Length: 67
Image (cartoon, rainbow, N blue to C red):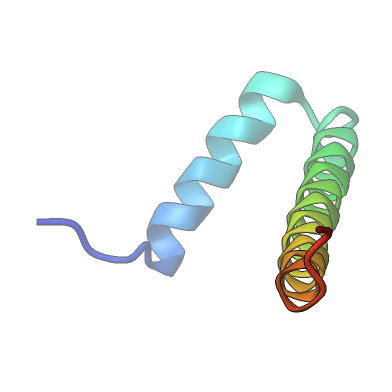
């Protein structure tokens, strides 16, 4: 049903974007998209680090219960 995009399809999409946004605005959009992807990855990595540290502290609390 679905297959990966080929070179032809990508060129058509790029041409449509160029017609809609223009040559001056397209690099700004690409830069903003790249920045948002980097921020998302940083946030995702931060969540994983937080979850790992939380799990480690819970294991530490299990070994030394407060009685």
